[in-house]
Image 1 (cartoon, rainbow, N blue to C red):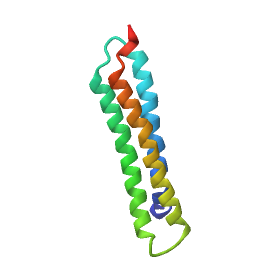
Image 2 (tube, helix red, strand yellow):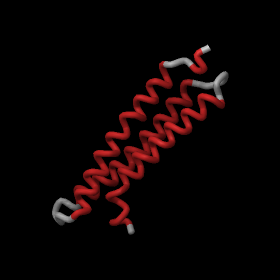
Image 3 (tube, one colour):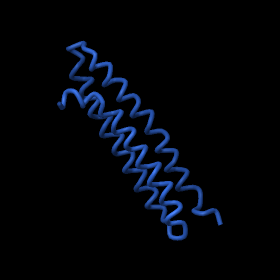
Image 4 (cartoon, rainbow, N blue to C red):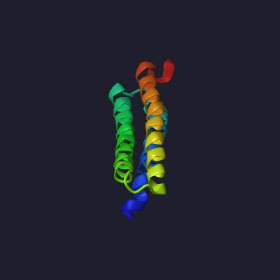
Length: 106
């Protein structure tokens, strides 16, 4: 089971990290408008980036292990790893925006 899921770990971790950052961050803006803290935005961004990094690292390990096998899983692992790195960019931008823009704008 591990050899089947490991190439997909970058995709799963990237999407999960972005989902956590986007949904929890936007929900926190409305729920904690008057008492929002900068560290909570930074913590959510760090958690999202940690999920992305963990998934990308697992896919990278599978890609490195599969370099001698030349099977289709090597391509899946490489694509999944690159997609995880691509999904780290919006998480980073959302976190920076959350730190720079004041809460509630009022």
